[in-house]
Length: 244
Image (cartoon, rainbow, N blue to C red; front, side, top):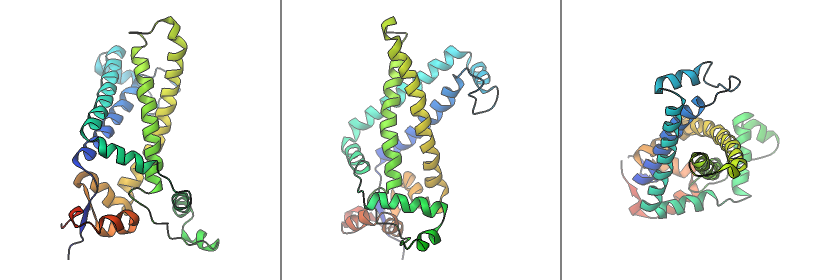
C-alpha cells in the first residue's frame, strides 16, 4: 500500500523558495565580481576581471547586480501580497522556539553529526532526537538567519543603490556602514546556506523534504519520523492528505 502523503507547501511557497535561491545565486556571482581586491577572490584569480569583460565593464555588472536585487525584493513583496497568511505562518513557526525541545534537538543533532550516537550513549544520554513540529530546530535556525539577514541585506542594498542617486555627502558615514554590514550579512547567511544545501539536498535522511520543494507533499513515514508533532496534527485531518 502506498505511503500516504501530506501537503507541506503551497505553489506560492515553492515559487518563492526557488526564486530566492536563483536570486541568491545570481547576486552572489555578480557581487563577487564587483569586488576589486586580489585578497578577496573566492572563485579563483581573475574571476572579477573576467566577469566584467563578459558583461562589458564594471558599470554594467553593477547595474545587473542592482537589477537582480530590486527584482528579489519585489518578488518577496509580491509573495506577501499573494500569500500573507503563509508568510505569517512561516514566521510564527520559525521564531517559535522551545528551549527544552528545540535546543535539546540542536545539541543532540550536532553530537550525532560529529561524534555519532555512541558518544551520547557513553554520556548516558538517549540518542533519539526530541519530536519536532513543522520545522526542526536546524531549519528554524537557518530560517531565522535568512529572514533577519535578508532584511538587513535588502535595506543596506537599497541604501547603497540610492547612495549616488539621492543621498548627499552628509550620508557618507551611513553608506559606509551599509557597505560593511551588507558584506558581513551576506557572508554569514551564505555560510548557513552551505549547511542548508547539504542537509536538504545531500543528506539521504532529508531527501523527501527536498523533493517536497518540487511536489509540495511529503510521505507519511518521513513526516512521522522528522516532524512528528506536525504529523500528529495533520494526520487527523483527512483533507490534508492525498494518496500517491
